[in-house]
Image (cartoon, rainbow, N blue to C red; front, side, top):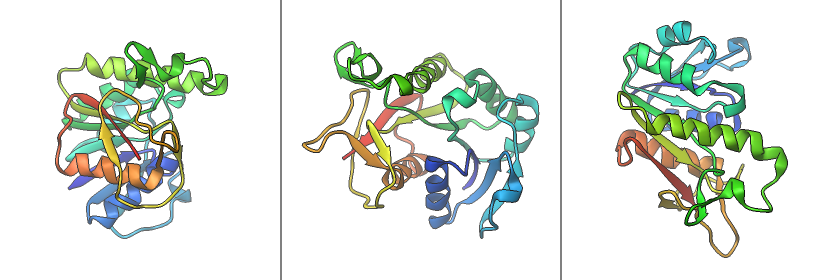
Length: 202
């Protein structure tokens, strides 16, 4: 598959890039500073600006799918969606956030008393992005939310999937970047959540 990956150098993006190349997909890594990206087999590095829909659409054109792994506070959902639409690519996967998941009916993680204030802007922007996608009828989008703790770890391949509720176990709510990448690429290869949000956790 030919996949365009926006934000290929970030925590999640770099693991998704590794998972895609591990499975022999051809990846266009779209980054702000191509000179910082080391050469890699199966990866074409392209300069791209998430804030410029016209130029970004030209880079995305001709791919089978687009994966967006950029911080919500560093991007504009409207401009990203516009760029993907204009490119003609239908499949669009977004690295989501946990803040919009529910911990009880009608109660989102972002609205819980102990939610860290420092994370609120990013979580709120992620929720707004999901809202925009839910109104989107043209693209075959998927929004994958991680668990509450989203951090470096092991690639185990052992995790659970959920829908709109935060996944927890006796150790809390967490998923590694590496296992998240497996879940996202699985969805890319065998779509099961088109025009839906789902979540992954241990």
